[in-house]
Length: 584
Image (cartoon, rainbow, N blue to C red):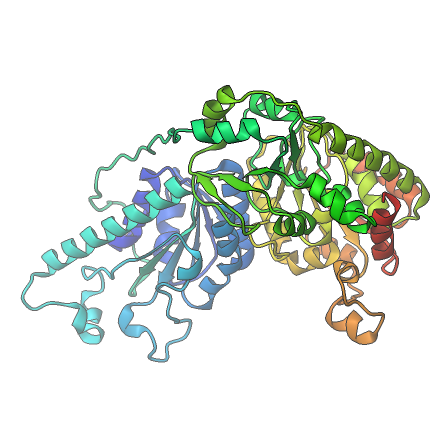
């Protein structure tokens, strides 16, 4: 086994072992050579090479998302590091423990005109859990340091003592960074300066601290008696669930909520919660009320006494608008880490896990007579019937294609959704409960959907399907520049020749200016992209061929597959907006 001769490179790898971080995603470079040598020469680590740093970070994020534990990304110095920022911000808002390890130049070589040199320390401070800026080893390249960075050396302390002080400081910083990443599920940044030579290796490791880390058990909840009393008196309780990891909440608690006559539970595709009584298409519930002549009366009938939320961010803008206008008497949120005041009405944050909360809360609850669920479940049955009728009447389009796709996905698949229109269409249709659903809803960006899905597929037992729009797919096409893509990886691209969501949003116009700067129409041949990346490609543009293609699409193959669905650019928005009119 080989190790870099630079102490800090060995120490970073050692701390990854202490904290159980095995997956390391490396982008090529020279300044990070000490780290690359140390990690790739150690069989403990599973190392992946991804050239594009933006894609590498989202690839690592996908693995961390699935494993619910830290994954490290390593890059060279300079602008390479800045390409991590989109994934870091997503990790920050989605509570994903991404460990960013950047190689840096020595401090005395910053801002003197050297290439690939920027101010890397604290560069992510607004969107990072912790920034550990390590100190330069003085036992390595000492003569260079004496000539160029003599301010780093002390004349009153021996070199050995100075190095020992540096190592103690670095140990403390690394311990804080890794501990925070694991205990708060936050991204962290570790910046490591290296002086040349960078490629020297040894077979004898440095002495490293013998530490053992054990994640603390947190399983406490405050006294809930007063909250239970309020709950037992309220006749209208709305439970709203955002992004949630599969099986995060015990089914027995979900079943209890689902059968309470005074409770309606609103979920989204990304909530990964299932019960026949849940309302899974929030916009289908609210849009008809918006269009009603007596909308104020109906909204007041829906207005809850208590809103209880848990999970991550919400896709539906309609539910946000409703609860901001028709505020609940109280809003409680359950989350061990944070509580966003999304509706500007939050009154209490239960800082614990959902299971811990419900384990203590539910035994204190009593049934109360209410028609809250029965009334709105009748509304739900009505729009479900009308939706099925509407799908029989519309021409081939994004909406019709998505309805066919939703029914076609095999059981137990892992489904990844791109942002913008894709994740919104997904809210309109039922997904089999055995399918786990993910989407980068932390920042809701389109910039890393493909890379995230590729990373999430690496260790997942069942195949993975990514459903994406053409703009999102093309934006992250470098995500396919990855030799780790599994042969059972599947991609469906809804290609409507542009950013179709902008035709749905207010302000769209049929002008050349709109098509160029908002819709961004294009004529890119996706088949040629697939050929370059050794991905099997098929294109369909009508309902009959789509149904036929979906039969073979999920069958085993030696290469990944991509199904391109061409839909009419100018009618998709009209069909979606007309749907809400139809069910009203």
